Structures are given as C-alpha cells and as structure tokens.
Length: 258
Ligand code: SF4
Ligand code: SF4
Ligand SMILES: [Zn+2]
Image (tube, rainbow, N blue to C red):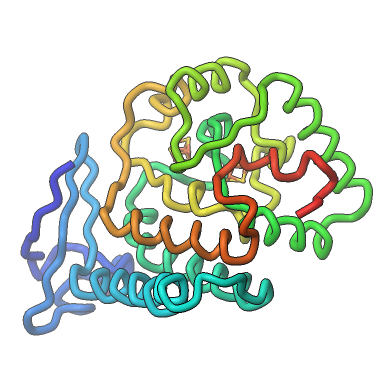
C-alpha cells in the first residue's frame, strides 16, 4: 500500500474531520499530510502529529519495557505491568486513530472476530480483571461456556512468534465460530481491553473481503514489531513460564488460572 505526502487545497474539507474547509480550520505553515489511496478511498493524516504519536509509543516501549529486560530480566510487579499495558494500548489507539477513522472498520462489523487471534498472558489477565468488574456471574459463566465449547474444535493453539500456521488459521475460520467475547448483537464485550491484535487490525478494503477471508488491504507499520516485542516482554517478565502467545480464549480455559 502506497503512502505519499499531499498538499491540501484551501477549499477542500479539512482532514481533521471537522467538515470545515481546510483554509478555515487546521491550515498552518509547513503542515504536511500523508495520503493513502486505496480503491477510491482517500485516508488523510497529519504526518507530524502521527509521527509524534508513534515516537511516543515506541519511546514508551523502549524506556518502560525493553530497557528493563536488558537491565534486570527479573520478574516485575504485575500491577505496574498492567498499567504499562494500558498505556501501550492507549498510545497504540492514538497512533492508529486517523487510519481507523478512514478505514472500513466500524462498530458492528465483525467478520474479523471469526479469525484466530493470539494474545500474551498479561493481556488475558487484563481481560480477566475487566470481566470481574464488568460482568455479572451469569455473563461470566456464559462466556466461559462458549470458550469451552469452542475449545473442543481445536487443539491447544500456541504460537512462539505471534504467528499461527496458515492451515490452522484457515481451519479455524472454516468453523465459523466467533470469538467467545463477541455478543449476540455482534459487538465486542471487552472492547476497552481487547488484545493488541484486535486493535491493530485496520482494514481499508471492502468488509466482504474479510467475510470471505480473501486478501485485504490493511494498515501495516514497522513499529508494530517493536510494540509487540515490548508487550510480549512485559508479559514474560510477569509470567516467565508463559513465554509464548496463545489463541486468545485459550488462556481462560482453566478457570482463569493465570
Ligand atoms: S477488519 Fe474487516 S471485518 Fe473487521 S471491522 Fe474491519 S472491515 Fe470489518
Ligand atoms: S476480543 Fe473483541 S475485537 Fe477481538 S476478536 Fe474478540 S470480540 Fe472481536
Ligand atoms: Zn481541521
């Protein structure tokens, strides 16, 4: 996917989404916009602002997580790790915001929730806590039941490098089994704390492509590697024995025994 810088004409609608002409809104000296064009879709973003957000995210990952691994490599406090994880999520969402705004992804669109999604242990722990706070006993048991039912269809799905083999991905999709956290109305019940892999899946092509598991045009960025590495290190620092990613619902099979 090609990303290139463009100049915005004064009369054009401002890319900030205000629906005002650019000349009456965000126009200022030296401001550059990036543009992704895909099948008639034009996704404009403020290059400087986006770069700043990405820098902040990458810096946070280095200073708070990756440097820790080099400095001590010993287990760290779980509460601090959960706070750091939340910050990583928030900074990721900010960096992705303009792309999400211009994407095909919207509330209620959920074919991607039928894919196999992996997560680190610390991410599952955040979801476990969220469920404790926001789900009543009945809802919690309902999700657990769905997890156990779905689990019958596939063996323990462990991934050392965050990638599952294609055959497993295809087999899982063919089962037409939604993520146990998807509600009957088609919404994510843990949206606020969903794993990084759900957050960074931003697609510009027709959602029908997702439904068919056909090739999609998705946002890809090199800094994701750094973020994923930091997140996995954070998880391993808290849970040294879980040095791998798992199919996300798998973490909950044994009654939240993290
Ligand atoms: S990834 Fe595809 S299915 Fe998921 S929200 Fe975006 S367009 Fe819809
Ligand atoms: S956690 Fe939420 S967003 Fe992610 S696959 Fe499950 S239902 Fe979809
Ligand atoms: Zn504006």
